[in-house]
Length: 122
Image 1: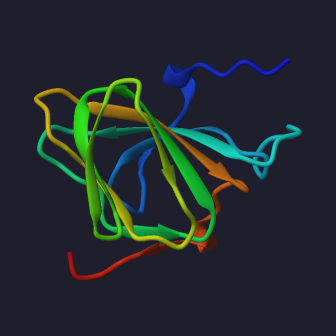
Image 2 (image 1 turned 60 degrees about the horizontal axis):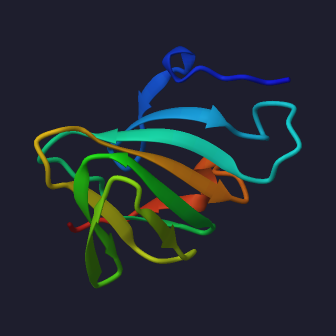
């Protein structure tokens, strides 16, 4: 049985600028899943850098309110919203509230550094 406590996961600044805690990744743990799971935090008034993943990604908003940008489309998102981000699309999210925007990130197949590209110019 594997039980991970979020407070015990190491925090780091991801390539997109979010504060990230990787919870599950089959490339780093012996677990029979294809996807990775991470917890992200964006501070009030901040946004992630525009970036592209070669794999599909899903965000599940735990708390806060923000604007999700996928290519040229923008939509407000808030607590309990689920966002599907298709592979190879420019994405970023900005926090539009006075509290931290917290969300889970699921990448399938699992995230690894070489599948992500930061997009210059935003």
